[in-house]
Amino acid sequence: AQSVSQHNHHVILSEAASLELGCNYSYGGTVNLFWYVQYPGQHLQLLLKYFSGDPLVKGIKGFEAEFIKSKFSFNLRKPSVQWSDTAEYFCAVGPGYSSASKIIFGSGTRLSIRP
Amino acid sequence: KAGVTQTPRYLIKTRGQQVTLSCSPISGHRSVSWYQQTPGQGLQFLFEYFSETQRNKGNFPGRFSGRQFSNSRSEMNVSTLELGDSALYLCASSFDRVGLSIQTQYFGPGTRLLVL
Image (cartoon, rainbow over all chains, first blue to last red; front, side):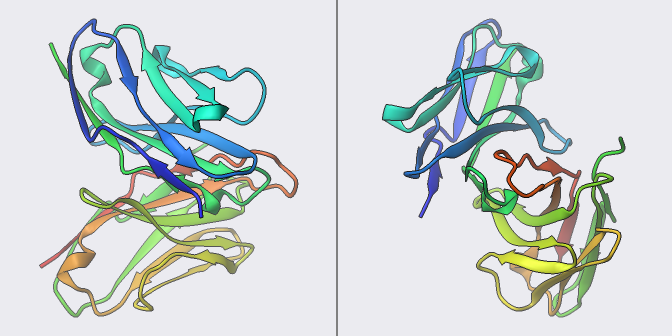
């Protein structure tokens, strides 16, 4: 069975610091990978997604993620965070060519940015 | 296009009551999934409806049920509410065309249910 693991439950950074949120998954076949963000009081929004091609994926608001197949990882990065990046971040994985409901979500990482 | 909408946004119920939540997907989306989000458990998949049929189901008791109408709108019902049902209930829709390699879900704002 597939699973998703987000190692950090709560990350606290100062503005302008670099960010890397870890995400590991277990699934042997073709995968689709996602990062979602949930800002305080707002709904889940798609940050970026990977399904094939260049393993370095660029998303909105300066975020990027790198798919490393050998490590089963899809870590989220941002070179310089802002206070407005305070949110909860969810990694998700789903088998390729499958229903969206097969997507499994990680438990989330809460990111707090000190101004 | 309008996004996924959910009603009501907030709900307070007492134990033993039942509740019905509604979700309108993005126009053209045929798949609707429901999730329960709690601080300790993250997003837990409840069920998915596609073309008025339940296609997948998560590991929740039978008190949780749903349906989908011909216009793809979906409702979720929870009977005999328990305190532990307090959560944010999210609805997500996707286009779900057969053979599409990637199925992206778009989420609504959720219904926050408080059971007293």
